[in-house]
Length: 265
Image (cartoon, rainbow, N blue to C red):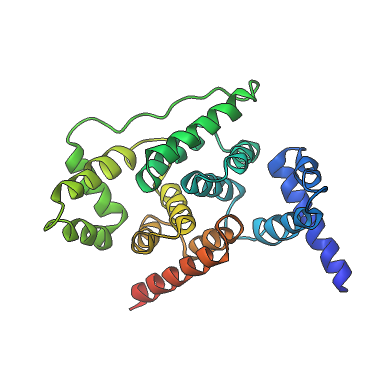
């Protein structure tokens, strides 16, 4: 196969994938760069969608929810976040799932990032009045938040999660309690997303943030503990090269290598 044919195949494959996400508005993405950086439009199609998005290992829904989580957490790409919220709807994600991902972001990137993400989601939802209406997920069940959080932590992150709690006892025991009560008792216990999806989007956003290596390793363990696969972990980290850059993806893969090796011992 000639280099020109390879180029054409990558472009055609990427254009088809972008069309699926953009729901017919793909040319606006490409044409919007024609006057300043036409090659960038081609790179987006060939690499972002032709090379990365069409890889096996993750479903379209997993890829879009992970991208929404990462862009919301980074907090610096509002137009792209709105595009991928729309893309998530176009590949079959529900409004409830998208909102749950954005609520989940508050644990790792803070309330401002989550609130800005929810504002973007509202704008996208309002622009699509013919879509299925939004039905909020149920809150976490009542009862003892601390006990519920302790159980969720044990089920999801196991020993790695408990080490985090234990490391805070001598300096910030209240923060340890907040991690259990809020992060796991309130947020992780909500309906609307299953645990493998929560952990997958957490790996994506922790990779994209690029400043939370220890937490990324904890949640790589968590993803595997709740039924995620090593292939899914590697795929979602690889995808972050297109949204957070190659250094973030390379650091994420180094963390994955450590986690996999530890689990093999």
